[in-house]
Image (cartoon, rainbow, N blue to C red; front, side, top):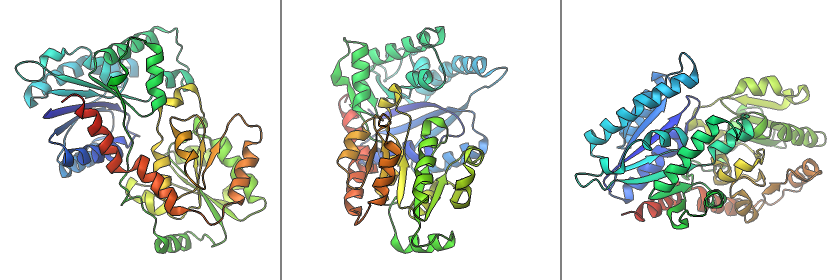
Length: 402
């Protein structure tokens, strides 16, 4: 394996490329002789694409964007993009002597399914195929977008997913529960081809600093006795908005508190925030490099998410950020492998959505937090979410096809 092409399809609001994949691939590259190439299909503007391009060059990774058409309708535009994208990928393979393809999720899989493995991998055509199944994206559409399992769209995309999983030399997922899901759906699959890879962050970047904490809290007019709850990430009903606001509301009745929301969707937060919480809430949209210094001022973090069936396939990177920052965390049960991770982490709380007293239990957990085992929280964070461990997990999967 010399030249690996990673193919992904992303909207403009995501930061997975700069915040996750580029750092991970660079970490892998430092330990393994491999050249990473990336084609990102996206409708992000040129400013964002250029910023990612500069980072990719710095990390010695070849990065290319391909525009996703949104006209005359997003579905029609996507179909046209796929048609053009197949030819673009084929030409890129020949030009750059690609021997390994790694499509991520549904749309890249659809394109790669139309490229014969014998057409890449050198003269002998021994190309390798790694499918990054990511989470359970089609099931997420059923749970949160209203896609029907009986619809033609679902059946078509599901058949494309099944085809690439069958043909892949390696399938990577973000949770052990996701692997079991695929095995349950198809008994003929070889379990040995599946590997869990970790979503990693740089533990030297996500690192607590007590001095900076004091200065930043002072800058934001946060008193020393105020408990700061933090949420970092996307917003919407599925991200535990109702549960978070109820916990903060109930806690602040008897204790001084602040609610810090770090999100790209500030409009949702401002529109849906209860009037009673507005005086104590700070809503900010920050560039990625600023996130650690604001997490640093918090006392308790939220990793609450609606535990629909599809969520067993995800690995919330925000959980890793919180643990690396020593933060006691309230995390939903049933999300990927979260239960296993949180159950061994001190001063963290598994939020059981089925428990009728879940809000009261969460508040009581916060009230009883004392003598926090910060170092132990960070140790677990490094074990499951450090960039080093993430690179190791990718290398382990890649080594199976060498």
